[in-house]
Length: 328
View 1 (cartoon, rainbow, N blue to C red):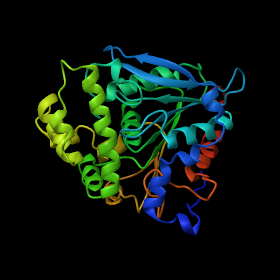
View 2: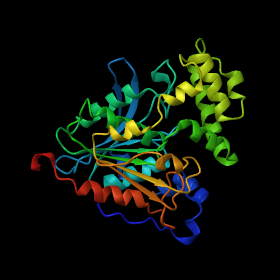
View 3: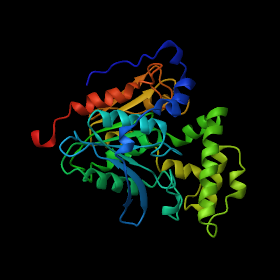
């Protein structure tokens, strides 16, 4: 793969503009044939967890393979960056499978238990099931932010439980150290307000659906992501504290060295959510390739006024370069 440096238009160089545009509805205006082809489905895991997803088949004898997209925390299959990436991939011949994590999107009713980022097994089983939908065709996984964190952990699990047709993983602005990421979110007024608004709405809905189990009244009134995390962990989890919980999904050197699938990580030095120093602390080697750009914000990488996205085009080039399994 030939790396092209991300070089946005001069009026898009600001990290906060990039981060805002990542989730802006402006970038998904117009027709989206991926949505026209979408079929809603529920994946059920061995433990009985149910995850809501959308599958958009490229069409019989037309698909180059399938790309599974994993959204970020408090995102969904309808997040702008998911819809934009999915549209671009679909228009370039790929089937697209978009997964909601537990308690994300319109899925709060499907499971009584709360979402925790440590629930890796149910997401891995969803990836396994999605990979088999189109038989032996090439299968790819792309995750954003927390979804990028999940993608890296899944790459490591594949060392022991291989997914034969999983050809490449792309992880965009992945959460490396959730404790630091939480601090960065709380340290930025606008980003904190954005996440608190979405999280409070999600918790209120969960309480409404399961009033006999949850009472988040006081918790929702707290004014930082860390304080809400602390109280939720204390009141509704088996973790000793938030520090123990965060350690449950931190990306370490062992995570990276244990990844068994070719993987591309895309990050930016100006990401206001993920400190770039987190990447420098890890040892990257084959089959993991790290791309750190000077600009891009968090999940941004928007090139111009038309909302062309650098990583979307990169993914198509990368995936197109993979030979079908039967040719290997």
